[in-house]
Image 1 (cartoon, helix red, strand yellow):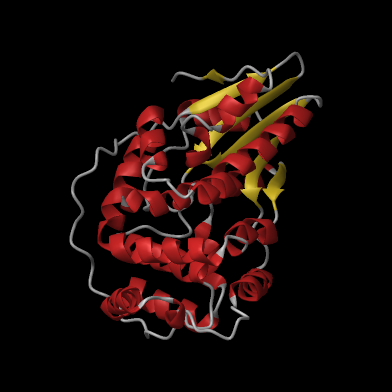
Image 2 (cartoon, helix red, strand yellow):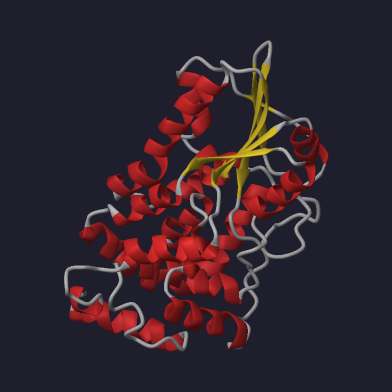
Length: 315
């Protein structure tokens, strides 16, 4: 069940929230760099030569490659080769979820959205039992129990969910987008963002507070399993096991508002973008979180409903 909230790592570049609050950023950085390494996770079937799934949509003068990303990975995964590299090299535009702004700009955006204005501290919004569990997790990771008090529950949840991943070797600068952007810069091709930072974080910030609190409580309750859950997700991604990845992504998603907000509604918006982009000539490499390309509400499924043909590239 930890995969339920952990799946957001396949939907959003959540590492951006680490720039939100200088004090919190320092605390979390100290956890990831100074704490003793976590015990090794159960072996995951991550291949030596990852071959993530790749799709293509094309007509007479337009080609759009569709690739699922993982926003935070361990160093050393060599997925940028074979059909992925060939498709990228054939493209004259890279499209990703969001173009990361200057760190100072991002910090202001996140801080403005994450600060709670109700006057009630985060811990005071929790039941006595949930507060005790939350404080125990904060203490376990050597974080001040009051570190998130002035902030919204979604912010605390997102940042807590990243800590066990960072302790287990995942790095915020090793995500798929980081490598794609590096190659795009080297080739001097156009880079386009589907969403703004304000939009992306607004999806969380606009969730009803009770949903945010459930988000936080579930993160706290399942944080011990987070690293193993992420290993399994990355393994399914690396092996192009789309059905298995979709099952992991959708497991336990009983909060329909969260599922619709973070996944379905965004896929519909992006499908509209793809439809309009197909009216212009050119070749595009479209890379979005792998969670958007799995399951019955996937971007491919919505595109098919709009009459577009999405073909899997076998390699």
